[in-house]
Image (cartoon, rainbow, N blue to C red; front, side, top):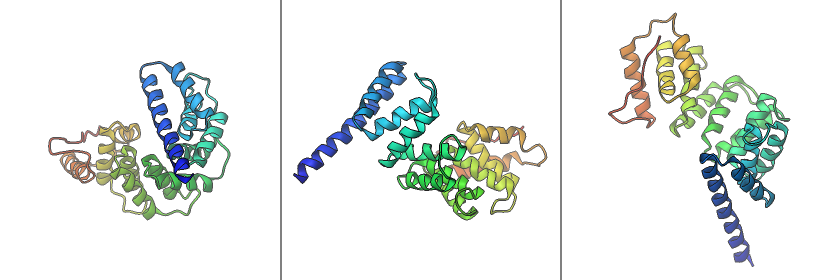
Length: 236
């Protein structure tokens, strides 16, 4: 009996993976209606990944009118079943005030998701720790959370570390060091970091050569580039 139950559970998990992968392929092909129908069918069968995907449709307003209440309800259902994206996204919605819940619950959801190595959750947890929202203010813990996310390739985490250096959050204010972290994030498309680089350094004397050298050093340490790559250090 136990073997049968385990086999059924494994089959359901594999079915969920195939279903959501197929739905993602349909979305890439512009077949939104087919993707939605497939995900809706999976969700009706109780597949947690499909429920999370269905929540995303309502959250983003893709194919259906945006409905944050439905999205939050579905994310909560999926999060309770341990889906890391649902845990993270529900936490964000709670923090933003678009879903019911306390800031403490949002932090708990981020921790649950981060425990499954979901990089966005590590970054969001760091933001909460650095601002003291839903958890005691703790810059050391925030830095560790951002660094964990960064080592997993989360580009926005580099921006957040830059924010800590520009604001002096747990470290001495260091515009040169901040610019290096922003340069890495900006090079990889982070819009917040791009904004900081183009508007936030007009009052500081940033050495472009030192900036490029430090940004390259950090990026290589965090596994973002090889010897042929170099972050764009432009500051205007």
